[in-house]
Length: 103
Image 1: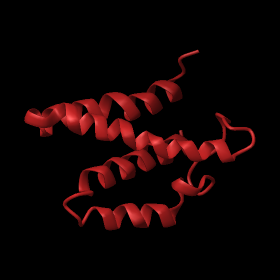
Image 2: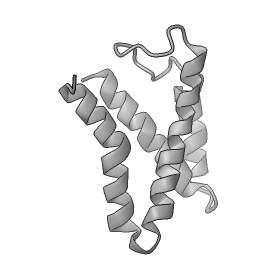
Image 3: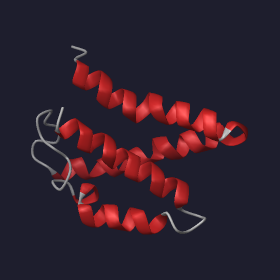
Image 4: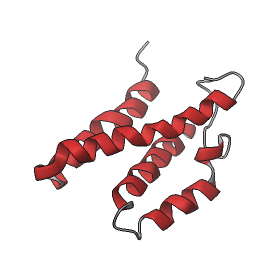
């Protein structure tokens, strides 16, 4: 049940952001971690696919919020103080999904 791919994917989605939040934002780590968790809302675009979940499908450039165009918008968000952490979290989410495509 818990394959290496599964552990790597969900570890990158949940454990690494927790560690990142705690070690780099000690005074606000809970808030930063919640932002990382909120970045997973981009997975709602999976509801547009048929089937909704396919463990062998690469999300990158398949789902609308996982495209290179969307990534470009997230990169732009890095340059604004109000959105830079969310933008980083979204890009990390895409990186996690990208790694999952080749594992």
